[in-house]
Image (cartoon, rainbow, N blue to C red; front, side, top):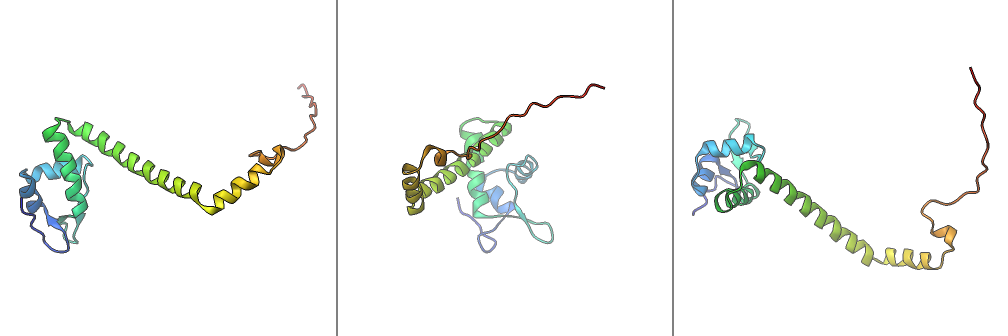
Amino acid sequence: MARRSVRDGRYTISAVAEMFEIHQQTLRMYERQGLIEPNRSEGGTRYYSEEHIDQLEVIMALTREMGVNLAGVQVIIELREKLMSALERLGELEELIESRAFEEFREQMNNATPEMQAMIPSVAAKLVRVRRRRL
């Protein structure tokens, strides 16, 4: 399947439709459903990037090979995005845990008293009984 590029890695709707052997209206329907959002030129021409092509490959695999309907595709894509975001945050957390700054914090906490280890410092408080006025 040859990818006809317009320029700079951008594809027109006709090139993408030909690439995936689907009708242009199918691509427009995917856009209306919110599954893909191609870039637009000033004149309104749709341009698909390599990222859009990758997204369409996922959509086509789900619909053609797995029989997933468009509502299911949307749920899967949203869950996939959340998973990718969570994995990214997990990587950042792992970097933080392995950092020298976190090691210094851990050392400080090991040497701290129970009051210093509290997330919210405890402060001695006085309980005062308040009486309500009756109207």
